[in-house]
Image 1 (cartoon, helix red, strand yellow):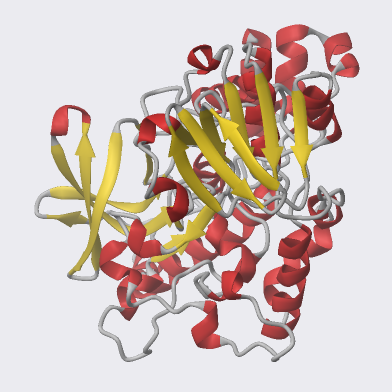
Image 2: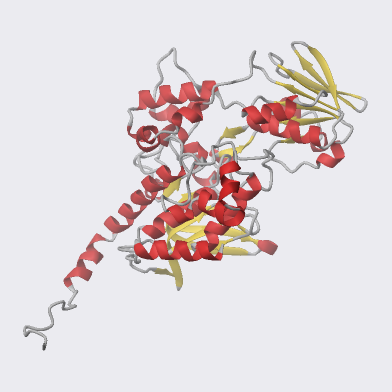
Length: 471
């Protein structure tokens, strides 16, 4: 690993041309103003910070609510054994070979280990991200939870809650939201469950679950996605008496649209398509859903005490003594505990840090009218973004419009507008290239007059002698 660290630094030194900081320093109330504040220290935030640094924008900082090492889902609520993407997919390396997952894995475990590897484990992926953060010396402040965003004097005033309840204020010119899958809303539990059962009787797949306490219990799982199967498998492996997974669809999804999307054309240029074509792309992708990987499915199926039930949506929940009674079109089922794999809902008003601006942000349903035979209530609730990942105002004359243009949405909720981006390993490199270019462009253009003054004042002689040097 020491040799690899040295190789990374040597490689970056060879291509460091034009990566020196060029932004003009600013202060507000005696405090340094960041060019870019990045919210989220997971893969998207790390890759964004590195991409900005490569463009000479080093006055940046990453903020994450989690303690060091707990950024993202990989060692918190992710319960798959491995990543779902192929091992050869790259991302935070931004095309630098010594920074790739393969280089890290070979340095840590050996070349043959990489050849024998099928997919990278989630623990190794977190360790790889930690290494990238460290070897690139990226600035990260952990245990900083963004609570509010204000606009004052052409700058973003960011309020953070830190460890111990301490409050801090940070000023920034630009803000990148890299808060992952639920960054545009929150994880979703159907009200017919949450209104009836106490929190001790169920958990969403995104929550901490003490699987040891589920040993010998009957577990009901709702959902057809990979996370539902991951949690079902974990419960089975931890000794659950029985696990029944229910889904509303008549068949388990089998086609994974992500594999189709992993081409440079889609990943680079989807955002340039007309609204109608983007809408049709997304309707197809969302209709297909993402199936559980084959190995995840077999991880469940190898247990005789596992069963899945298609065409069995849960329509009602009740209690009968200690039993949780679930009603489905196929009859009643009884469980001791429920695991809910119903994904997330898009509603920025549910995010504390976005609640103040949510009512001003344009949504797809407000900027685009779908054909009558191609509706989608789900897509309509997503924010309609600019080509630079920025929020747009519902009303162009809204005084908050300049503030919205300073906020770049690199969460999963950017998908209908921008395609796969920061919340996807597959698309990260393509997304951060577009994002970092857009941010750099805005910062440079805004300070164009000052850069011109710098040029006019430039008086460093290159020609210093008119006589030939002595022989």
